[in-house]
Length: 128
Image (cartoon, rainbow, N blue to C red; front, top):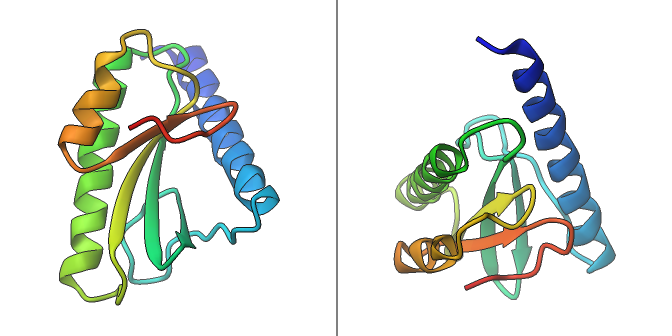
């Protein structure tokens, strides 16, 4: 196991979560971590009556395809768990957040076709 790559990936993940949180706050939104009995998503927020559940994936020192596939599966699962357990009374929308733009443009359409949204730093704009 390459511990240096793991450390870089962990640092990039935390930096991306922090940057997303700050971006949401600047937009007047309240970023939230999961509650005690909620799935372990990275960040959530509510906007216009919709609950957004985000999974953040770093792309530093890893296989982008593997990270994006993993993240997409995680966020779809988290959103479905919240829907099924009735933890949310509003619509739940999954968002995969990447550290930076992926190297291949197919991921935007892939996420959208699965019912998720894709965004990445540093702007965290919606890429549907």
